[in-house]
Length: 308
Ligand SMILES: Nc1ncnc2c1ncn2[C@@H]1O[C@H](COP(=O)(O)OP(=O)(O)OP(=O)(O)O)[C@@H](O)[C@H]1O
Image (cartoon, rainbow, N blue to C red; front, side, top):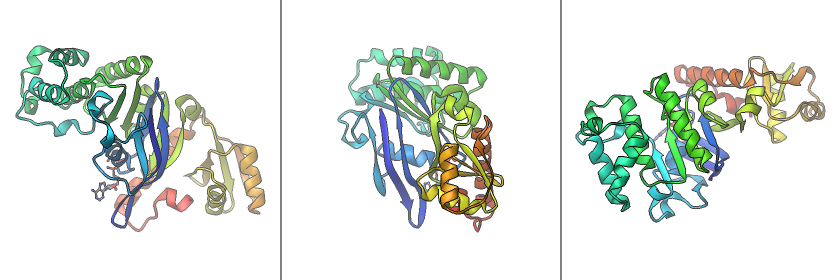
């Protein structure tokens, strides 16, 4: 189980992660989805003890990563497959980790086999690996200590469709055996293929979370109003998640609740209905577009900030 509670990370005046809360449960694959720059890596870096939170907390099996005596036995982490030492062979990379963790030497071959790297491939230097092979080696390192929890940042990067299917099967088996998997991606299709639960983040804030089935069904409500910014603000002030979707807003409030919030705020509503199945994709495209706009025009307010 992974628990992120009100996690905030600021770099100077810039808030990369803003009050993020979610859990990744045992027996489930949780997809952490968001466009580039949304705050996924920063959240995972705090979880893996590589960055200190400004406030809030991130724990694995109830403990901070830094407080785990031999963390590799509890949680396998792959944050950047391309950061592995190019001069070492795949096998040397694993042997070093195996010794550091105090594991039996046999774990090296077991892990190589788990990720489908052949003995000949394991003898090659990492600098000659494709990105897909590096991802496999990174996952082998994460699995070395036989942990119950896996944290993977963009693990499908560089994998071809067969590789992505292989990874899905590996993670599925890991979760079916009671393990916890948290993996990030900036691609909705990838997360749809692999994850059971989804946490969607944009501009540092969680904008949607739930089971994949719920989210793809479009749980939540679409609210169209004369003043859509005020509608979003009223819903956010009432404690609901809000995401702009074109000239409307999507919210996690059910339609009756959203209607009452609009009535209480005195805002005329022009449309109010359960959102359709495209809700998640709309929301994600909107987030991605907002990020692209932010990148090209720093003056544009971040969309979650504008809504909330
Ligand atoms: N050390 C740092 N100093 C300043 N800003 C940072 C630092 N690390 C990350 N950021 C900023 O925080 C924001 C979130 O970055 P992060 O890498 O967490 O996003 P991401 O969702 O993982 O994106 P990507 O898919 O591109 O990896 C970005 O705007 C990034 O520029």
